Image (cartoon, rainbow, N blue to C red):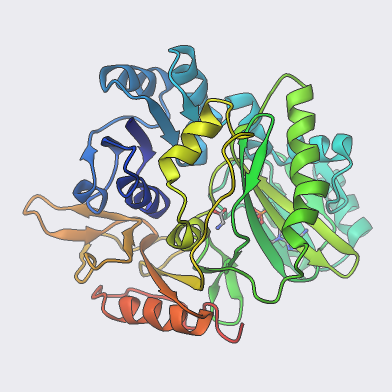
Length: 406
Ligand code: AMP
Ligand code: GLY
């Protein structure tokens, strides 16, 4: 099977590494890929958010399966364009991807499907925003309605800051604050049937102890030793299955990853957000434990054959991912500095490039993902931190408390 993988981040590098281990994958083409992925497949340039360009690349590369990693191409309709060429694609249509692309749409689907989530108001004017802030009270949760790479959400006790964020966005969702630990569950769906991966937890804030602004994610671990045994079954039954059925019923079947971001609150589990793709960096840790060949699983989902696919196999133990970011992230970052120690096994490239002399440099906010595996979370953590400490990058930063004391 020839696989075309769209994307260029750490998630895609980890997907590429798993695909490269799948014997059914005879050829891997990464578009555009990154310097780390170049060791695993052919990297070819493409404008990822141009549906016609990706569809035409799928045809010329004779792909049997296209996998779309990031959300922006999905929301732009890349999967629709590939599907229209008759090529199986793992990733939802533009309409179904709105479950991530519009927080207001996600809330409406959840209400229709009876899925538990925070009470919320969609606001366009200052008056509406002020009324919603006062209705829910502090801590205030204000979310940009559109895609914002994990940085469009402000959670604060400061009403003026909450209102200022609302005024910076065209349309916002203001909602009730959810307490309790967060869980990410990725559900692989063929539109009708679905399979859950291992649950994971990510670390959203930039600073140790969960301080500072939200980021795309600074680390993750899986599985969750503290979670109740029936957690995954409960999420499938109360969240994933009703949501997938609701989308299918609207003629927008969801083929791809339904990312269920949940809070286990004192009043039971509630959805914090849905995404339309694998979470980054959680999937880097999850794939480290997946024994089932990934290409076969995603092909079954892309071709509507998940019901007969069988059980997923996982290796024993735990995996931890530590993200190394550039100076300044999640604000303005300093980029272009030389990067060393990045080609170890277990390190995935998230924001790297080669300069004109062939030197690896750090670009973007999140630069590398260091994944450790072990018999326990403590062992996996040690391995991940050993990798992160071996990275040489001026101004490079990582949290010191990823998966600590779990
Ligand atoms: P989102 O982009 O919706 O995932 O939000 C990013 C992060 O903001 C979440 O992972 C939470 O840590 C936090 N967050 C979002 N919504 C809420 C909420 N209703 N209550 C508390 N924290 C939230
Ligand atoms: N790790 C959070 C996300 O991918 O949105």
